Image (tube, rainbow, N blue to C red; front, side, top):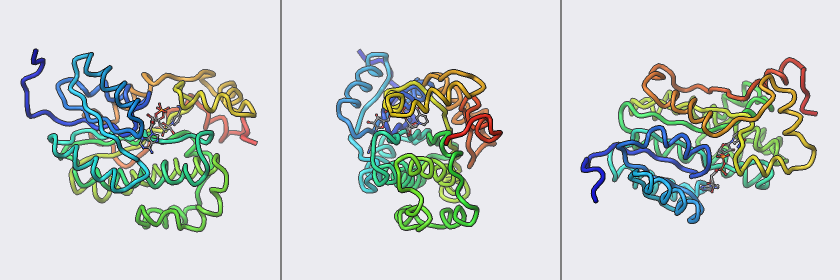
Length: 280
Ligand SMILES: NC(=O)c1ccc[n+]([C@@H]2O[C@H](COP(=O)([O-])OP(=O)(O)OC[C@H]3O[C@@H](n4cnc5c(N)ncnc54)[C@H](O)[C@@H]3O)[C@@H](O)[C@H]2O)c1
């Protein structure tokens, strides 16, 4: 049975085939070719099976988001399948899932590799979305350091002394990496992605119930519960709510939005900034 005879499909790409990413991709999958990338073969098998059985045209590729070459091969594969219209990046590790070095390598440098690689293959009119985090607002980076970051190639970010001096714990490494994601999208929107006439933004979720979040719920200190209680929404959110916002940022109604971040945290950062809640 041939479900779809359209052979010139646009390509939708997801790196990090987890909860939030697949929820976003579902909004753009119809009639298009989906390419999933993940470090886990089991994850790829599961999502490819799930999407294929739902009538979508999906395939998977093992990718290590900490390895430039692996990401460049992934981008080349995507381009070989057709016009790369959407790129979604959700490959990441939370503070409980890795050392500071691992988090910087994956959440900061790996994201930079992907933004660089897809900045060479995006189709005109295409759009990209990097999933950052509300934590990108929790550990401010001084303005002059941000300017240095904006002017530093991805490979050399790890050598910036302010980063190595401050990212000594997994929590701060994560906060810093997630703020740097905002800067990576800002820079790409003004340079490589602009040249390809493609848009790129970040989305910074608060606490979203996914397997990754469960690792944080189980971390010592009960911080997540305290944040939920202090927030305006007083609840967590689901991957489907993130997909709503992601679909907006990637879609045509956001055609004038590029190089910016959308904070979607139920009011956690408002509580912190106004002193209603303290991280300490
Ligand atoms: N869940 C939350 O509460 C929350 C909140 C804010 C931000 N985030 C961020 O959202 C993103 C997605 O999180 P999620 O909750 O959907 O998690 P998830 O665990 O469901 O998805 C992450 C995916 O990334 C993959 N991955 C991990 N390391 C990789 C590597 N080296 N190369 C390729 N793939 C790799 C995992 O196998 C997994 O499939 C992450 O960047 C996370 O930091 C999550």
